[in-house]
Length: 53
Image 1 (cartoon, helix red, strand yellow):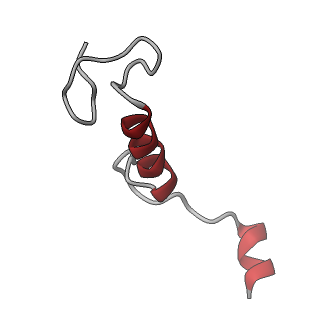
Image 2 (tube, helix red, strand yellow):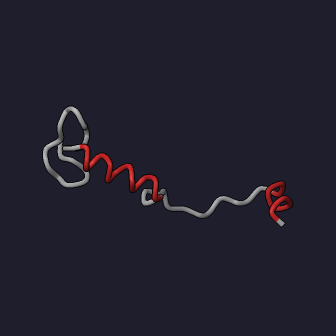
């Protein structure tokens, strides 16, 4: 199995990644919001609209 970040062979210790670095790169992408499911924005519930105004 190839590392999804760099394409090298994965290491069993970091599976599916090849190294700690690639695992950290993936985590950073998740935390930044780089991985998203495309679609319309969720509507704001009426109770939240009243408290933010």
